[in-house]
Image (cartoon, rainbow over the protein chains, first blue to last red):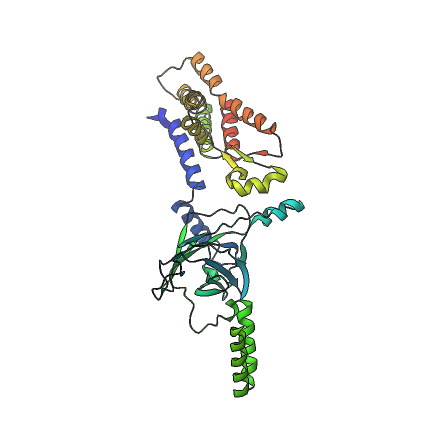
Length: 249
Length: 155
């Protein structure tokens, strides 16, 4: 039996190397032990991630049962991503799609021509940090010829971010089944991990204002309406007549 | 009782253990650097500009699966089977075993089992000669392998 000791030594070396380098229960256990040895688990430090809109899947019809477009074509979807009430990313419009997808990579001819191309210039991502009590907010729009309508809003805590695909299900149907966010670490290759994380309850709560998600035109109109409101009944009627004249034109 | 024979047996087992570790760890890491073209290549094929780890077992399997079966067999025999056989024969020679190992056979296997040194040198030379700023870094597996070779020399 002793003559097999060298083979056992080789196998032991291979096993030790495999378990130390592979991500699995052994490594998690070792990490747990080292955490216990070093004291109680430290609170998680905020992590910076690159986030982008990966996919939105819409229902075949609107929430009220009507078709998305009058000509029977699919919705023209776009989405905006906000963090700390600041818009960080606008997706392009995916025309006539029930499943709209976007890439986190872009290439602008102007970047190529001016010669100052850097890898960060090729990324269409929002950089966010998992600060407590902050939220990643997503507004999904359906585009018509002239306007865009907000059809669904999602709101998830920033601390829920982790590398992979964050799949956010719509719990109440506004015509959207789910959306997927791509999340990658702040530096390195911009690669989408296969790990999919489900996030169930993310619809916009009623008590939270969606004002900052409105397009600038809508916000101006709201602000103007508030100013007229302060003037009382006369102001209201003036605003109404102003709006009517605008529509007639 | 610790005597020279026991020390030799321990060294053989240590060398065998190091060889086992080296087989499972990357020997080299190739770091592609394409200069100005890097962001454009990265845009179309991000895998092409990623650091690439070279593992002995993975390389042999890669050769086999891409149809280079003769080369895969030669490397598999020289880099895997013969070193294992070498450690086995060395151990038999130094253990109190009734099996006699012909010295000529052991020497021949020892020579052939050095083929992986030639392979690593070849990879280093080929990649260092490539255009662009691509670099090759020696990884943990290489040092484990080196330990195995050095320990085996002193037996």
